[in-house]
Image (cartoon, rainbow, N blue to C red; front, side):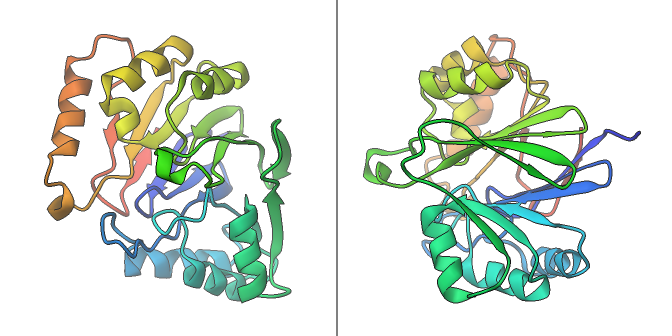
Length: 252
């Protein structure tokens, strides 16, 4: 059986994950009204909608409702293409979808009050989700989901915009200390303090660093700084793949 992990970078922090014949999309549609992060390219969006319409993507997860992780209009179009599409997300995202596309899709919200891990299945795999504090004090009230998924024996972790704190990595490590792929916003591996906490609990085989700003908006050279930190680091973490090209496919 082919258990190669194929990850297509679809949006700022979005990925289409495929292992074997099964796929799941995470934050695959985005539209950042602030213009800091790139949106899902028109060509990539068209391909995703076509695949969804043909039943090739049956499940989508959105980690939270910010525009750089979720686009309401594109997701409503996806529900029109496949009214049986399963969407798992936060209370806010599911509430907006229920209002915009009543009666469409199979929509599941993780309660904001949930303190434990929510376990569920999707075609070809298993999900464990938990509420995790969003980065930045100004976003303290935003519900953000950390996603831990298993497909064909492979384990992947996507924490959305979870604040890189010790308790986050400890909780992920309790599920798997050696995930096959860790997909994170690039500051998680680009800040020495975050790397120290990460390395204390997790030894991922691969790291995919996404959520990069548009090049013209990176006036503080955040990306270059993160790459330099990764080059100098001697903490045993693998050198990350930086998601600089939307639409690129990674074979891991």
